[in-house]
Length: 283
Image (cartoon, rainbow, N blue to C red):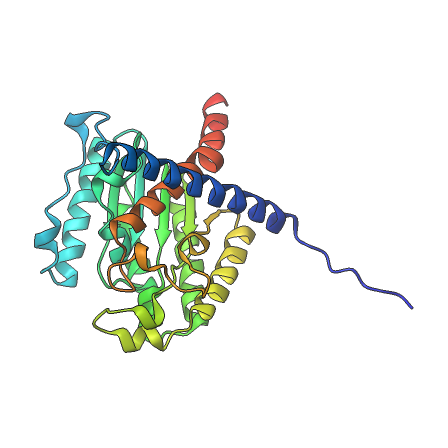
């Protein structure tokens, strides 16, 4: 009797290896930061980026943004993208997504880059797809994309979400052929411990569904030859829910959550992105 052997894709093996190294490195980095903080009685955080102060991209006060309607958000992001296109700052890195990207504390973003934040509160994959042209003229080195949780909250099907993600990837690859595109996983939510005002909508979404959706998103990224950053695994507890210390309400992130994200971005950039950038520079 013959037995069939199920093959394990090579890209999946290297993905598991990279994610394992990333998770270990993030844990060690956070542990080291906590030890330093405990020793000195302070919270350690990086200084704001200041590669070239006269070319920095201005970011309006986020408190004012909280009261803007969607079109006003788009208009402001368009203005910021125009500044970035005209000034062409070195090592331009774009965050594209929803409120999770939007509220990323500026002082916690990894150093050595000029960041252009293109996040909008409540954004969906379809909304992001329609406004990608805002930063067409920019010349980013890296584009980090995180989108999808608001689609799930609104009841959008996995099929539609994944199709929009494919279109986002295709658009960015065609418009920014020299940029490294990194799709980030959709984060879990806090489940029963969530206190967000629309908690019932979160509870209607199983975190296991988000995990499976991320697996499909990772597969799509691999087939299209772009990077995938698994943040989901770093933010979940043993029950598969968003860890309480990393969130303010079961959906949005706390400062500790952003420190984890920052560490993942920094380490992933050093392990996965920087070596490839150096290779391109030598050609």
